[in-house]
Length: 192
Image (cartoon, rainbow, N blue to C red; front, side, top):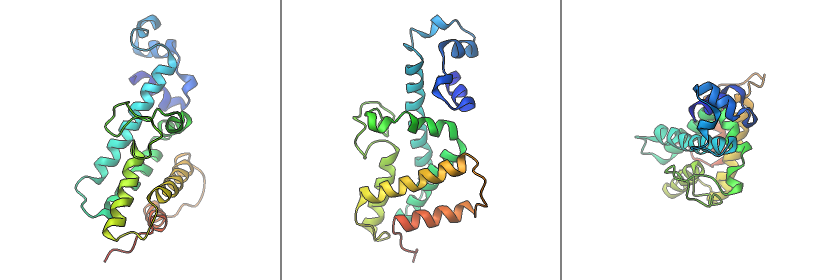
């Protein structure tokens, strides 16, 4: 999996994963992979599952020790954006594989037993939970958690794709853009 991950980071596309290429990188015979993976698709799926779990841990770590719901939401969203911009090929893999729609998204705890169509599963759950907490404490004027989360996720995804692919544009300060984007979509009130 480490070798496949390295290939994906370098190349960016699942088609770069072949049994021979992975075996060559590891220094083993291609046949040695079969007891562990049935083929390249299984290897890519395993890397995808691990990357979803890594994204979830990255978000959770960023929110660690932050008690104010508004600040936790901002920290989690910034972590999502930072992960995507910092890992453009792995981030792209998560969405090219269309895990959420195919029912294969892992659960937030990293296990694979999920129908994947549940918005309360995977890293998206952190976003929904953050919005719920902001609504509950009055720091958000949003009234529909799922709709707000989908809008915010879509905007963050667009920002990640534009920034992560090095789109040449006179970008303003990323922290300012993130704060304004997150605050406006989540209808966050200014801190008191």
